Image 1 (cartoon, rainbow, N blue to C red):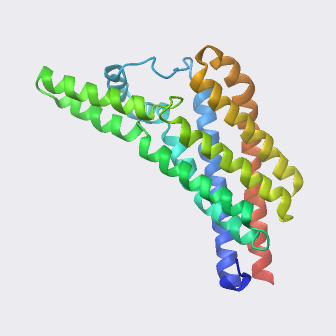
Image 2 (cartoon, rainbow, N blue to C red):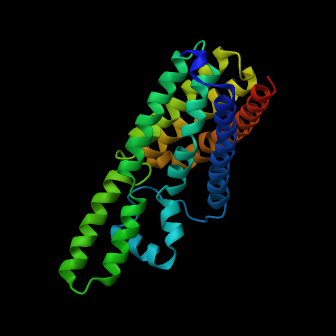
Amino acid sequence: MNEKQFSDAESAGLYKLAGFAALLAMSANLFDVILGFGETEIVVSGARSAIEWFSLFQVNWFKGLYTLGILNIIYMLCMIPVYFAALIAHRRNFIVSALAMILFLLALALYVSNSAAIPMLVLSGKYATATTEAQRALFAAAGESALVRGEDFTPGSFPGLLLSGIAAVTLSVAMLRGGVFGKANAWIGIVGFTFLTVFSILATFFHTLYFIAFYIFGMVGGLLALTWFALVARRYLQLGRDVTKD
């Protein structure tokens, strides 16, 4: 990538946008952690039928969206500027950053297109207003299909979660090699997102190990990821100020 493709003002603006986006991504993940600590029940995929999900949406639509991963979508959307800015920050050695961005965009497309959160919200409303048993059965069947395709920690949602984790690890490797971000920042990302990827694998395919996976890989990886977001945000905002000064 040619350094002159972006003016100083454009680069500074992108770095600042990426910094604030990283803070928003951190906030979405922190909110997820806080809500998770407030739950007395951890729902394993397949534990609820579509009709049970519809009932949850009718009582608390936000809890339904949250449990089906809406915060993951918000997090992924916030990360778009973070990955793009890495291409500029590592423009003299950007191949690994480019690979990370490609993996991330694939993850975003797969996860959002398969997500059950919004479809289940819409179907729950239609199920509630259905006037015949045939209509209710139709919406319930559509709900079961949506859950199979996109409930979190199912084979349907797994490719998006897996690629998202691999993309974050790859981006952290680019930071380790690029010399723009600190080595501690990079290693925190490598370890943290590796732990979260292992958690996704165990939670998806080894349900009996869910609690072990959650409290070891999920919590440790989550705390490291929150630290990574904060460090990345700080560095991007510093880069934005430094470019403006120069």
